[in-house]
Image 1 (cartoon, rainbow, N blue to C red):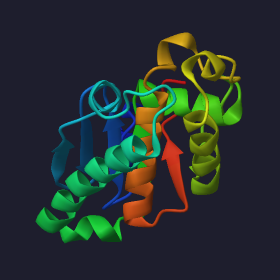
Image 2: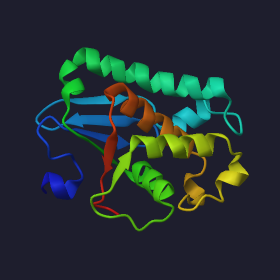
Image 3: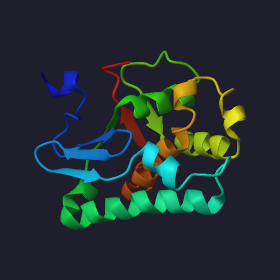
Image 4: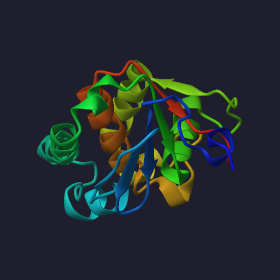
Length: 171
């Protein structure tokens, strides 16, 4: 299976961010794999407990991801020079659906950081019941979406990314 069909970033030195319920796996094309030992579910169970989340909870969730990513940067400073980042997995796909407002995404979909920030500002201000009314946000993802956003934004901010590709191979 090629990188283009298995969802990994094909760019030499590119990063693939695979978001699972309880961890985030980061792989650099050409070598290097790291893990952040938390995911959207663990963030929501431990940090993002209020409905809607309090500002301190959001700050902590973003900070934990940032700190774990800093550990990766210390271990492999070349991560900072990545030419591109691709997010994969159900959670990344669900975030793209929310940002677009529907599930019909182009194969080359790229999320702009400003758009991710806008979705974040909208969803963190809404209680769970109101979040359910957002176009593109499916009921099974309503409880973890803020955790997904914390992960994506913390990584985008740490790498100073203006955009992140969302793997469309399974879309």
